[in-house]
Length: 387
Figure 1 (cartoon, one colour):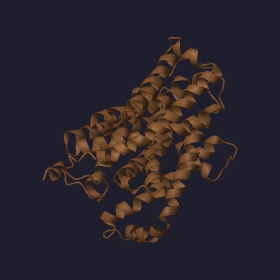
Figure 2 (cartoon, helix red, strand yellow):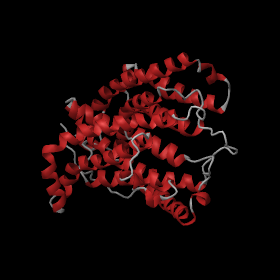
Figure 3 (cartoon, rainbow, N blue to C red):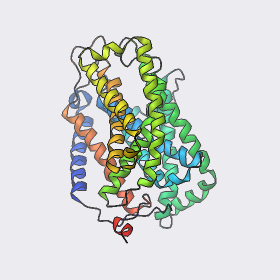
Figure 4 (cartoon, rainbow, N blue to C red):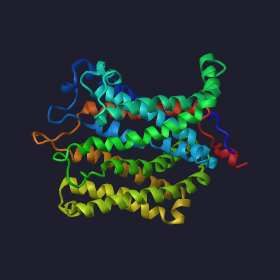
């Protein structure tokens, strides 16, 4: 049965202290960015307008947070309640991930204080405007979906939280469906952003099907991301591994990843771009790593029941899918993107790397805080399973 509860484990550990160190370093680098500006703290320029804060923190962060809407759709829309055990952790990961996606946009734009303007000044012909609105609304929906979880723990102590839980309970199904719809919209629109730059994106990645490929890759990475985060959480907190849920969940990935792989390979063959993958360039090698190690290999591994039943085997295959989608977003937004006026190739500065590492550490830190004190995880402790 699904019985989420706080985890009775000491919060502070060597791993948490390492996270704290990265968080402090990230805050220091962030202070430099806001005091001295983007030009001083980053390697961005007029010809390199975005870097890892967009290509990695935003584009990849949105994709890797797809476990929130895919598990919500599976458990609450399609009624597969057996997967409720992984829905809350996936929802928490998505809420934290999207919060830091919004924060990454805030620190990346030159005039951070003007981030509110799309709310009042609309451009209905802009894919970026649609992404901004969907992400903003979906972020709000995610934290609304988190209200029942937080209210279970703190509803009696925080009257407003308890009041919100009572008022929203009758309408929560609306927010769940809205979250799935909004996710599908902006996941695909992230690909649309690069469709408008046909002369600047490498032919291995540029295609009119880029929005559909982005959407299918988000579907493909949703459940593998749940598998990876569940394994990491249960291992670090000495909890039961929950393979009885993760093994059947992995079967959906065979279908979604297979569709993504088929469309991607068909598109390359149809456009005659596949030979470019073997020319030995950095772009070609990065593409081969993305498709070979991140799509074809894990899809093949997941076809074997022994891999799906093995904790290590399933974790490895899921990790390959996550890495493949992560590399895809980096490839599309950074490796493949070459403005005609570019004179110096982009490579992130130390400050950019520290801010990104600090953001990742903060997400993990807050996940640990909420998983420790709120009813997020439902896996029993290993010593309870041994009784």
